[in-house]
Length: 79
Image (tube, rainbow, N blue to C red; front, top):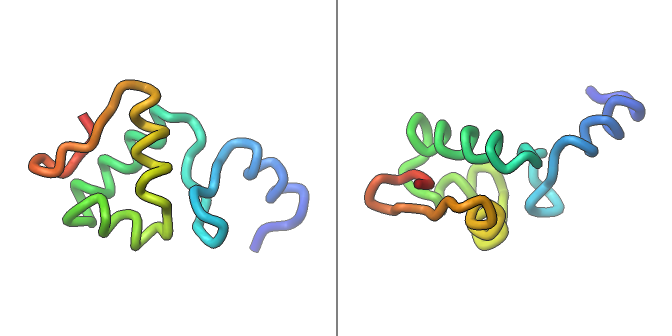
């Protein structure tokens, strides 16, 4: 369990893409690494990843597109 002070610090480094979601990394390159790892190891598609993480797919795509990465469904990763 998180105490209040630690939760505040964690919030400054991470971002929830949906209100109920766990915290995903705010830094776009760390986010990219996390998402691609989960897509490789756990999830068969971006939709499955977003369901598992309770993340908004359009927001996730937009955040990674801002740093030059788009989702390749055939490769099941952001490239």
